[in-house]
Image (tube, rainbow, N blue to C red; front, side, top):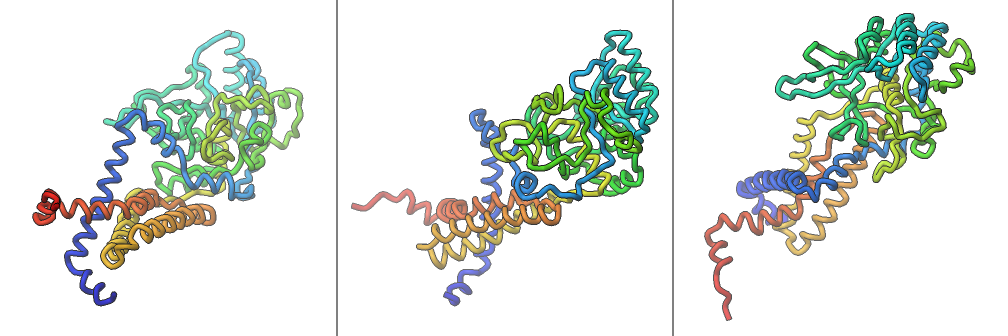
Length: 423
C-alpha cells in the first residue's frame, strides 16, 4: 500500500485535489442559489438561516450565570398606561434620584393637550433622560439610513436619543426572527446615531462605553443573561438578572427607595402586567427553550436592551471568528478531506462509500461539538458553517469529479462513454 501511496501522490494528484476542492465550493454556491431561486424552497432556506447551533448553549447548557447579574439596571413596565400615567411614573421614579431614565416607547403624535403637557413637564424634570428612535429606509449606495423616526419634537427638549433597531434575519424587525446581534453605531443624513443601550451606558459609566468602542466591531453578538421569568417561565430557564417592577407597584409604592437611587431605569412595555404573555414588542432570542421549531417569542424588546446594557457594563462580550477566517478554515478543512478521500478513492475503491460517509458524519458532529464547547467555555463563536457544509459535500462531490468531470476532459474516456455496446 505504501508503494502505491508514493506512486499516486504525484503532481497530478495534488492538481486534482485543488481542482476538486474548487469544484466542491462551486457546487455549494450553486446549491445556495437554488434555495433563493425557487420560491417553494424559500421557507426551507429561511428556517435554516434562522437556526444557530450556539443557541443550544444559551437555552440548554448555561446554568443561570451570576456573571450577568446587574443590580444597577431596573426595568419598569408601562403596561397599557396613557401619557398621564407614564408622566406620573416618571415623576415618582425621578423623586428617588436615578442616574438615568430611558423610555423605550414612542410619542410620535400630539394627542390630548392635558396629557401631552403632563408628559412634557415630567420629561423636562428628569435630569438624564434617553428616548428611543428608529432608523428607517437604509440606503446601501450611501451606507446611511434616509430617515430617523423620533417622538414629537415637543418631547425631545430635554432628551438624549438612541436608536432601538436590533438585528434579526427578518426583512422587517417586527416579524418574528431570532435576535442575536446589534449594531452599536449607524449613520443617517443627520450624522452618527448611537444605540439606545449605549446612550444609557454612557450616562452611567462612560469608561465602560469607551472600553466597548475600543473593540471596533461594526456588529456585536448579544451575550444574553436574563429574562422576565414570570412572563416567560415556559420559554426560558434563566431567572431575573434585573430588578423588575410592574406599573401598579410604582403607583402603590411597593418598592424601597434605594431600588432607583443611582440606577439605570428603563421604562418599556412588558404586557398589560407582568403576568401577561402578550406577543406585542416581543422577539425570539437564543434563551428560548425551543431553539429549533420555535413557537412563542420569549423576550420583550425592553429586556433585550437591558441585556445589551448589562453586557456593556459588565464587559461580558462574545468574540467571534471573522468571515474571512471562516472562509479560510472552510477551504482548509475541505482540502484536507479531499486529500483523504482521494487516497481512499484510489487505494480502497470498494470501501469508498462506507468510509467517506462515516468520516463525514463523525467529522461534522465533532466540528459542531467544538463550536458549542468553545462558545460555552470561552464565549468565542467559531465560524465553521462553511467548513461543515464542505465536509458534508466532499464525499459525493469528489466521486462526481473523478467519475464524471475529469473523464469529460479525457478524449479516451469520452470515446468509451459514447461507444456502442457490444453484443
